[in-house]
Length: 243
Ligand SMILES: C[S@@+](CC[C@H](N)C(=O)[O-])C[C@H]1O[C@@H](n2cnc3c(N)ncnc32)[C@H](O)[C@@H]1O
Image (cartoon, rainbow, N blue to C red; front, side, top):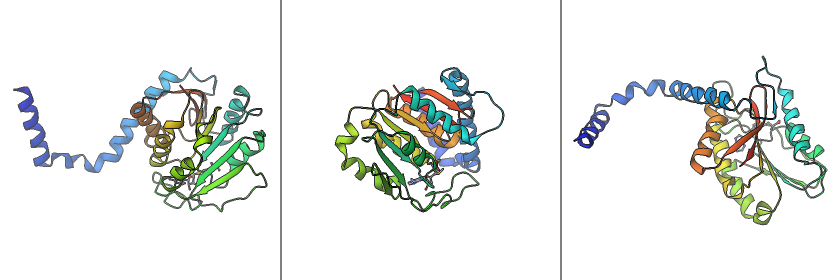
């Protein structure tokens, strides 16, 4: 009886088109939903990261370097070979930092970017094409850039380097693409190669509808837990260790 009533109500909702009442508010409703989840998540996890500034007024973007230094020391990344993958290179600020600070000759650095800017709008302020930068060149032979959207370049990069992707040792993955779509796409593609102890750096983690939402869905859909080890600028720059 209840099942029949349930089906009837669902059909009624569809045929009446009542759902259209919510259509104009879909973005704000999603934002409020994710804001609620983010707030809850931060309050549950605020004491977890060993390296944190929660709570501090204001935002100092330079602080993200403290997070890089923290993991460089904690995981002894200066002295071991690892695979560094950066998604969202732009002018290369973070990429260069890692090239300069992780000196092991067998550390491999991959950078992925369109170098033509964001492939879609990011919120109301950053339009498609924002953050376009010319691809830089370095004398260091350990690095390689993959130009194009991740959706086109990542599968081939993985396919051509399966041994490296499966190699023992840590991976350090910097996700600085800002967008929900880009972040979730990359996490889903890297899933088969993620190991316990790999590190994932999110550069805009506390943006409710983008990196936060992507990380939440990744953990739920792939049953993979990420534990925060560093959180700066009130979780804006958060670093996770794969469990
Ligand atoms: C915030 S910037 C990166 C900043 C850089 N890590 C730094 O420290 O200077 C974001 C970059 O992500 C890139 N991006 C976002 N989504 C992408 C996608 N799906 N494919 C390729 N590049 C993407 C954009 O082109 C943009 O250059």
